[in-house]
Image 1 (cartoon, rainbow, N blue to C red):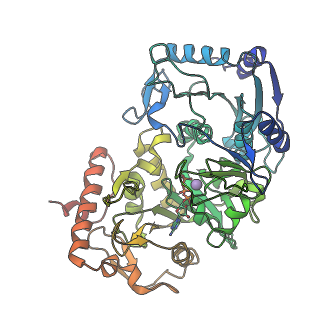
Image 2 (image 1 turned 45 degrees about the horizontal axis):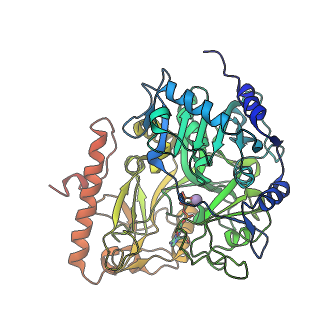
Image 3 (image 1 turned 90 degrees about the vertical axis):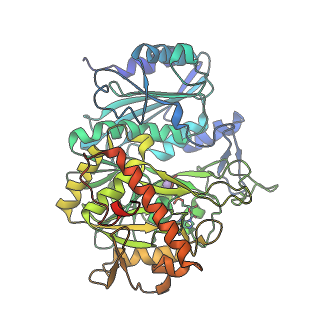
Length: 530
Ligand code: ATP
Ligand code: MN
């Protein structure tokens, strides 16, 4: 197929628009967002915006165009399919909807490695969304050069355009449609900004394996000796929180590739959760929320314009978007070497998993494919039953290919690198949700430090009977009891029942991979529920 001409598409939007302002820098975008009534200043000078009905991603409204390229490669069990004709109509109607609007065009880079780069242009009628994506992606001339070989991508962002299911093949008025063959994305009917960054990630995740690059929903940082660490995990498990470490420059907090010589960031900014944010537990993120140019999304302000991070009346998913450059220490060039440590983060609301466990490479692949975390059932009183979530590769909504493709890439890279793999539970201890409490960030950081600095190599460990992984008996600065969840529960029999239940959920979830996946959970897990 002939190379698609993205400039023609972008120009056709420009022709219809009332005006196009191209590559405005942050102060200009803030000024236009304020002037246009899109948001307001916080007391500290950040830009505060709200997103109305959608305060999170809308995975069921996400579709991939089913064509010759994607038909046999996408894991359709996990992605909605859109017919090419429907996409053509959606694109044409979305382009027409820019008529007379002030349009903001941002030409940015995704991929700090010039061999695996996208030249991403976002067209949006919203100044604050332009600022958001400028904060999040890599701004040209900030230490990463745009390669002439970069693949072009265009995001047609029309948040107020309403899709028509009959005409566009959408589920409703909201749609996120990805054309992988031409790298065009249409985002309509939602103001939630995270859809923009995650659609770039989805394009990358579709294409990257072809070049032998493992795309990863993880954060990454690098230690004093150049040792790179990865932190995989679903939303809310601690990728952003734990990768912000004053002793370890940050590579990135969410989306990376593992290529021929190591890890590179896809992005150039962070999108941090701000719920219950405190200056003590998360000083770098807290400071970032107080600067001009940061976007605060759905954070409630008090009468003085101060953020109320404990106020979840709009959503629990409140966010701050800021460029990496505002952090005190970041890794140069958005890249790090081959990982020495790989951490899988989970927030186990069942209170069963230990706060840290060492995984064999087989167990690492098993946990990667399982992608376990748990959500607390809500804030209604009396609801104490957690909900297990299994999301393959810790990011199923944005991993278009079959999980075993990513699993095999990970397995190969773990073996080649000899990286140590750990499972870290940032969830509940002393009982499940409603009985126990979430482990404190300081304890998790101490466990993590021990894993990263090598002090657990050769440490005495027990083998977990159910899950088969190895659990250290002692970690400096951490109460030994914490390492054995059963000992933290008042009722040991209740722990055993809950543990069997969780093991059974793991086992049943893994059945979807059939015999194709040669990952072993550990000897007893398969027997747990028989
Ligand atoms: P996303 O993919 O949505 O960006 P994430 O994995 O980056 O999610 P974080 O933004 O790090 O998630 O969110 C972790 C949340 O859990 C934060 O609000 C943090 O304050 C809270 N938290 C509570 N206890 C812990 C702990 N022990 N370790 C890590 N985070 C914790
Ligand atoms: Mn994050």
